[in-house]
Image (tube, rainbow over all chains, first blue to last red; front, top):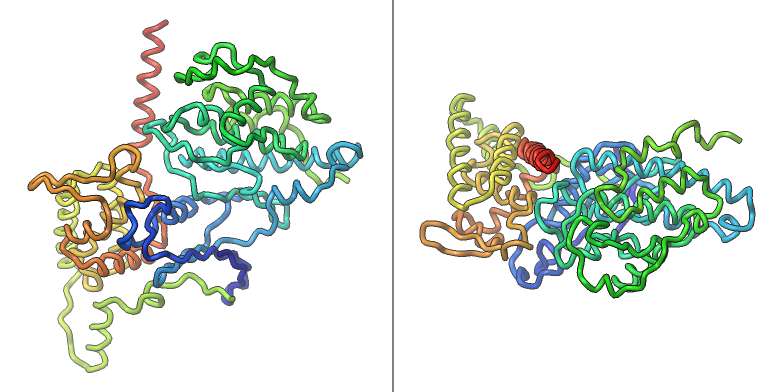
Length: 303
Length: 181
């Protein structure tokens, strides 16, 4: 349950995420073998609180404090009203296609927000947090136009591909191909967040989800249809890929600039670097911030 | 609903046992012989050794052990050994450290921890942990609550192992590629 509240002491408006601890459900709610005993503070929320507490950056949601009393956990964080998903859906089609001036506006905003997304991701990666759930819904826009990252439920403190991680991360539409192809316990690390950020970027420009698959294989087909089926799979990915990939139709890569109408060449170049198949050759958040697309003065206060 | 500012553990959980005794004594006007700072240091150090030996006995990995020690030290920066008995805190810090470092990783071993001495196996959960530490389960969970409040949820401990490991990994990779070239 999420409630908005105002502090009596500081007058700050905050959001409270209130979690009622179920007596039988422990750490991860999906585990049935652990049910029964009281496990104290649930591990998943402990992890979320721990990671959010470790972050201190203007583009990352600030967790003010946590209370835990009589099986009820309350996470107090600053109040930010709008998320990017709502922002995109609030714009009509007109903004994305017909009206040139309005589209220009969308493009500028896209660049403005994307820069902040990458700043936030870069910060998280630099302190060793893997977000694993980057999507428009988890980006909040505050009233002064600052974008903040949230959604640390799936995040994890580890960037080294030291142990197999679970496949069930990242909303399907934003899931990187190495997670889909990696089998039950794929090995992946920071570049998965960049892939998701790239998908978000395209969504902010076009108003539509870039790859909208209904299943894992459908998602893969959508990706290959736009970016082309990799000819030499083991070379394109850094690991063994399942053999069924050879049975998939061979598509030629399509031009991204056609898909993202109106986006300048630098923007298309950045996006194509964010959507590379090989995780190691994918651009890092830090390099992306140095990309020519973000150079120069792009403040929104021009007019 | 109006929110409240960050609550001290006292507000939420009531005064600690030590504090309760202290106020009782003050009210009744009895002079109490408290332990000195040096004595407290000795007690803390003694039980700190206990954290080491316990984690060795449970075969906990180094990152859990060191996180637990950090929690222990941080905890006694705020609280006194007279407030909370270090023996109980010893188990609590290990328990919370296991949770924070997500050990045992549920994808590798099926969260079974083998005790060496009588090769007793237990699944890693609160009752088993409390049983091993010989403290009642409610006590463990209550102390967990206290510990989290006292630490103010600053649970991330940056150990030197991780960068070291990353460095070594990079190093081996580089030497491998040099060999290939």
